[in-house]
Image (cartoon, rainbow, N blue to C red):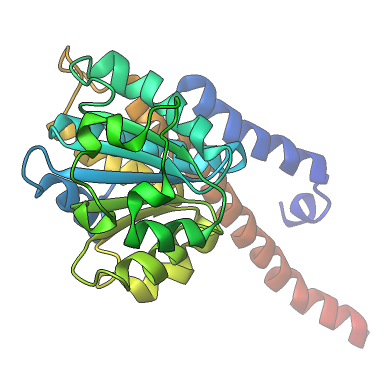
Length: 291
């Protein structure tokens, strides 16, 4: 057995890893999720707001990070709309505006048809300037967005009436893949309005950068596809679709955890086998050297 493992062709390992990823995808396997405190705090931040509260969602990512962040974005929008909040969408990334429209078309319009653009949600769109957009909006939101996506004047949109700056928002949600994103929202929004609340959804690679801000500056935080899956569990439990079943798009995070789990388990098994072979052959190699 040991000799077989020593001489195992690496192509068998590649095949095993391919199967470990492919089988859960093809079978659409979903495994139970243990929900952590960060996902619960994120859920509570939106759940605790009174109906009709103003929620700003900033989509600061592009298709390269969609695999991790889109399930979060879908769940954020469905959760906030289920609570009856007013939704204000913006983007600090050029393609973030495209992701906003895709999410509105996939989640808001089919599952919350009562939402009317201009009255219940508004697409502010992408604005160039990186963190400068946040800095201007903390002083004057109409100055940052004189026109909204679609060409309407800021003053012509009913749900923007009386809003002077970002302090009017009851909660800001940053779905972020990098710069500009969550860090800039902490630096220029939370710092300007210390009493305001911010939650975020981030890629796994940058999540560690935001742990120091949680839970004071960031009151809720989702990290990578694992965080998305945990949040989906909470949202689906309380706000299923119209037929009482979870909305299919709000199961994507849990589905994507399937291949990740099986691939990680396979890696652990391979590491253990590799160490087993090493320690079992080390003694015989040493004795062979003495002879």
